[in-house]
Amino acid sequence: MFKFAFCFFSAFSMASPALLMRVVASAYSVAEKAATIVRNVMSAGDLGIVEKAGPSDLQTKADRLVQMSICASLARKFPKVTIIGEEELPNDDVSEDLIEDGHCEEILKKPCPAQYTGIKEEELVIWVDPLDGTKEYTEGLLDHVTVLIGIAYGGKAIAGVINQPYYNYEAGANAVLGRTIWGVLGMGAFGFQLTEAPAGKHIVVTTRSHSSALVNECITALNPDHVIRVGGAGNKIIQLIEGKASAYVFASPGCKKWDTCAPEAILHAVGGKITDIRGNSFQYNKEVKHMNSAGVLATLRNYDYYASRIPNTVKESLVP
Image (cartoon, rainbow, N blue to C red; front, side):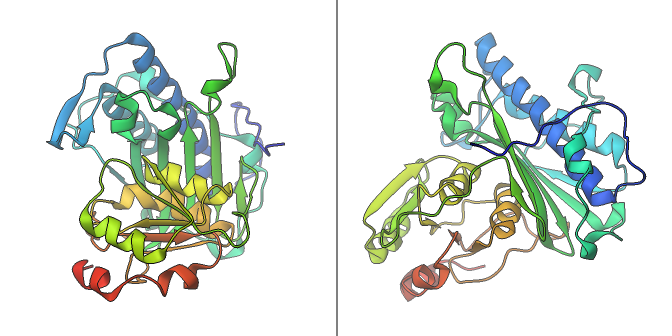
C-alpha cells in the first residue's frame, strides 16, 4: 500500500513549526493545485504550444500557468525566499484563481531535522519546474509528466516535492488521478513505496527525446540488461525509487537545476545518490548557472558500480 500524506487545508494548528516544514507543507498543496491546472489545460484541448529552443524544447499553457501559480503562491507566503522557475515569464499580477494558500497538516506535524531548524527565509532557494516532461505531455505520454518543487539551503537540495498529475490514469475512467511524493533530508521520503531494482540486474533509464551519440556511447559502455527511455527527470528518479531501474544515466548537458533539485532531495532522503557524469555534486545556490553541463548519473544503490564504468572519453566530453 502506498504511504500517502493526508492533507487538510485548515488554518495552522501547531505552535510555530520550523520554517522548512512550513515551506514543504505549502509546496505540497501548491503542487496539488498545479496538478489540477495541468489536467484542466489538457481537458480544455488547447495546449498553447510554443517552441523555445527547438522542436524538443516546448512550452505549453500549462507550463506558464503552473509556474505563475507556484511562484506567486510561495512568494506570497515566503517573500524573502529566492524562487527560480524554468520559464521566462513577465512579472505581471497573477490571477487570484491561480493562488494556493493551503498547506499539508500532516507535514507540519512532523519534527524538522535539527540541522534545519534555524533556517531563515533569505537562506532558501526554491527551484521550480512547472511541467517536467513537456514534450511527452504534448504527445499524450501522461505518465511521464511531473511538477517539481525543490528546496535548497547552503547550495544543497534538502527537500523536494514531486507531483504526478496523471498517476493512475490508465486505471479507467473513474480512477482517482495524481499523487504527491515529498521528502526532507534527515527525515525520509513519503507518498510511494520504496523498492529496490532486481538484484543482479542492470537496468538503465535515460532520455527519450534528447538522445545523442554521446548518450548512447555511455549507455553501451555500461552493458545494461535493459534500457528504459522515458521523458522527465522527475519521472526517471521515480523509476529508481520504485525499483523499475537501477541507474539514471544522461551523458548530455541538457538537464537544468530545476530538473534535478526536487528529485535529488527525495533520492538522497532515501539513501540514493546523484551527481554529474564526472561524479561532481550539484550546487543549488541562487548564483549558480542553471545548466547541469556535465550530465546526470543517479542510483538508489550501487552508485560506485555505475560511476566506475563511465568511459573517460565521455567524461572528457562533458565540461562542468
